[in-house]
Image (cartoon, rainbow, N blue to C red; front, side):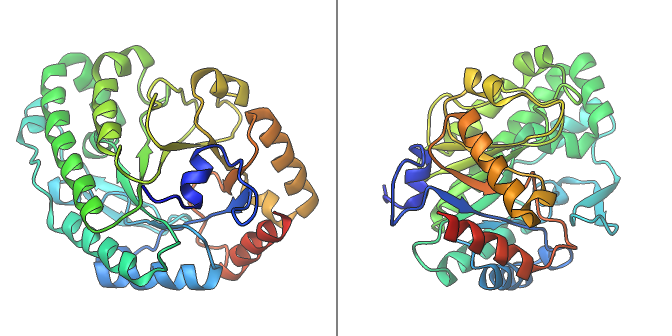
Length: 325
């Protein structure tokens, strides 16, 4: 197992120079460019070259794992580059049983993008590949209301679908590992009371998440991103090489709540408006390090960088943290 700065951050960010205790890392969507390997690679490398980031996250379109399984999503000018579903693949319970576990052409294309990126990047810059958990894919395929209705009224059908999605996701993770990706950025949009009540998640979803996290065990390091408001920590891993990234927003659990549930280091996602205010940023970082009881941390935003923020601005943020460390 390589002993890089990513490994050290997962061990708690306690190492001194040449491994800084603080490091800023950012990623953004590349709408339109994210529909093919060549253009996504070019956009990702251009972003890394300008920002001089020390970690690269391959960020395909958010629907890339379900695009070949039905439904239709397009970019409608969302300021973060996210796509909007125009139609859903699953409208009746029997649709869950028709889902394929075979990797789709777009998934294979994104794995090819990962291979190209890993060959193009310096060896000491970790590359993480974005993967959406099976239950989050189910949300995309059915929509929140339909998924909840089917979980309540036809749970066996949904579980059959989750099994297929889980098998496909494990194949995707193995494909990323085969091309040299350093870790998985596992996105979970379903760990929210707003979308899925915790008792229902524990009964029908938690085992699926655990299988996917187990499939990530041999990577150098992984990040679990718990997306959205009103989240919970029932699905956080108990073992493995993980950092946890969640939105530090009103209504989400406090650092004390997090520490009671999980001992993995947190990727501190600070509001983007703070990054242009050095004194406020410095105070926020100090406060969160204390609150999370961490000696160091990866620092980023709540989620992807809005498209309106220039790459040069992000480069200045990264450079500022580098000098501060």
